[in-house]
Image (tube, rainbow, N blue to C red; front, side, top):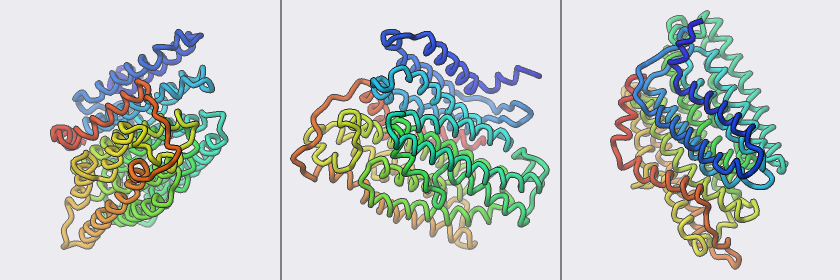
Length: 484
């Protein structure tokens, strides 16, 4: 075996090294004094990983083409590493609580293990490598959801997540068996040369689409999402809502473009239906939520619909729009969860929306930062969320004309998504209304955020303000996407 091919997997090799270092440090640390610098040390390593992923690297392969990487894949890895870094930063206060004493290393190892699986998934050039990466990401994530052993909701959320993940994996493998039977190979580049538009191939694509739809939380494969988000620790919910969704959506887009090119008409219509259902139904259910983590769950389902809108257009623009959307979604969503996390820690664990009534009167800075993040999620200018939605709308209609039926439907779907943007603004403003307008005799007390919360909010707020205004960021992503 030629071990030099591992040099082509620099981000993954770094993650394995980080995992080993965390294990050794956690094993060797016996008291709180020795663990005092544990979180900053892990943050430093994750920060270095993020910077390495942004470096321009030539396309590389390993294991006979089962592992492939290029500049577009590295961009997505950098975004996922950034999301993991922010989650590790904001988690310090939670992992240092008395009931979590001694489990800090366990938490970091699970985060890194999940990220390693996501990296393998987005670099897959073979369905076996893709499936291994998917399971490497899903199983540690289920452990993270169940990490809060003192809450029954955490165990319930983990059970629903792992059972749904197992079922969706089975459905996906059933679809892949059809694809393999029709093509005789599992390599992405070879499958597209051997399949034709036959009922067997279409059935395999539908089953594969359904299985991965569970991972992305697309309607009608979304039923696990709200209960899992509510039951998981808030920092885990934050990680699950951005990293897992972004990795699965990016891989899904790559597979659609690389593998199912001959079935583009079929999967375009399938995507049109799923996108409209995801955005519309999630928006309607989000209006009814009174618990913030369930509210953010339906928000994430709606955002998943917008993310997949990038897949129905031209390839380069679609990859760039999806990557940029995930980047903006990471900073905006994690900013909201940073506020939810610190309020939950200071308010006895409650995440009810009513507890935020009059929040501005006692904590104006946190209220202002959360408002900015919510406005970005809603797509209000001049925040980055407006630009990310604009790019996915442009990607959705790119390559389509009114002269063809699929082209007409592409414009219809984008119009429906645009209308739903107005609807989403209404329910995001419900939180703003609670913080600024609604009055209560017992508002949340004034409190100071810890340093890590301030740092995570600073990074997220800077991203919300800068990613939309600094055009070189999108240009960098677009240039990398052209080399997919």
